Length: 294
Image 1 (cartoon, rainbow, N blue to C red):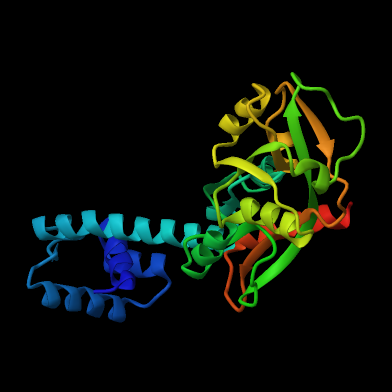
Image 2 (image 1 turned 180 degrees about the vertical axis):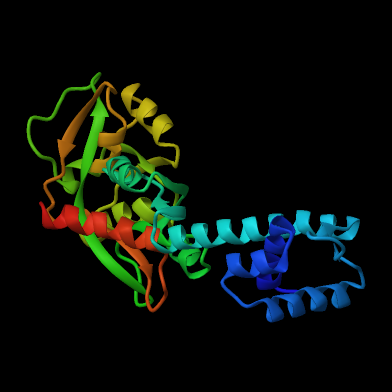
């Protein structure tokens, strides 16, 4: 049996006459009678008692009618949901976010939610290189990453270039000017992230480029703990601007690093030559509009 036959059967049961069911379905009576006969032969059960002016449904027919209603209802719901997902009205948007977060993401999600309130979200946080692999594995559709990375397999939307800041406790004397990496290298430093990954790598690479040897006394991927250590005067640190925007209120001095090359591009990426969900396309368009309005 197929969905069309089930709809035919529902009409026959509810109208109780072939002529009335045929009129409701906008078909002639003979093919409808043949469809009913075919269903009975396929199931090996009589579905309708044909005595008197109106049909009477058998026990077997009542069972089929119950399931026919469920199946057709599910089919209708599936059509509606598929259309909504295809239009980006509903569905789940899977987003990857770099470990040290992304500025303005919450504002963009709020805008998207206002336009498409049925869309739900799955957000995974990880290092940029891991996020690239998650996109290739189809675990997320779009991701915010920090460059530099090999991105030949991805479409890239550049969002902004983020500066780094040198931070110290308010227990120590503030520096009244921008600081250079040369001045910073002798301070005891606790670096964000962990060795070989993300921001940690970018910081060490910047020192290395200038042939400097920073006094690294530790590393910490927990930003809250890192800021606590700096606030207490245990160490200084170097963090991207996003950290300061996301974690306000700490008793720290913030100093712009004067070395002009000490910054990192932030980009939104997705897989090339891959069909994105409508929800992901709407998400990307919002960021494109944000860039064009800057």
